[in-house]
Image (cartoon, helix red, strand yellow):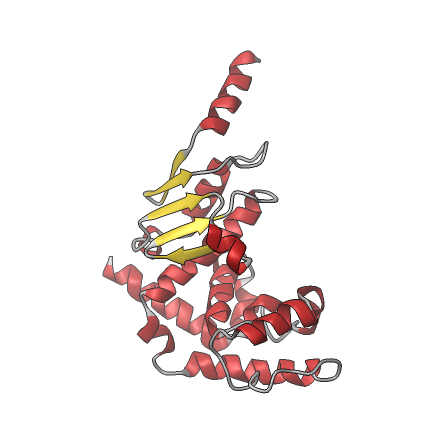
Length: 224
């Protein structure tokens, strides 16, 4: 018994892990009974190493940018920063896979957005969503034409509509309410759906996004 308890204590004290060969530094303590090895092993088993090769390091903890931007994670300068304030292992898994998608996006902008096909699919969905939301809310003027991140649109979706309502309205349009934030988040949510969600749902609901993801992944795999 004491050996088992000692092992648990040692695991909680450990502050360095790896994910696909990437160093993971635990800067601030994770919640009690949280097993980071479950997180990193889960992701490594699902995300091929060639999709994470441009990420140099992952930091887990509290960072000023998170409080300033009201976010749980971000990708910057080839590093992923993710909060240590996690509900459970799956919460962190989703955060990390989301940021891995943004790292991949950062290095493949021309491939993803060069033809503008993904932007057109996103805007078509925004227009459908606008028609539903306008029955109860005053939708921002550029909601149907602006596919980039826009703070007023983000605030409208997050604070005015709220994600509980948005997730219900978005059914059969977006994979989640957050995917409606911008074309970049549309991409990221699609990446999550591909690896830890429902691939068939993604394929039928977002055909251009699905094809873009699958084609890029195939090309990157062939390059390795």
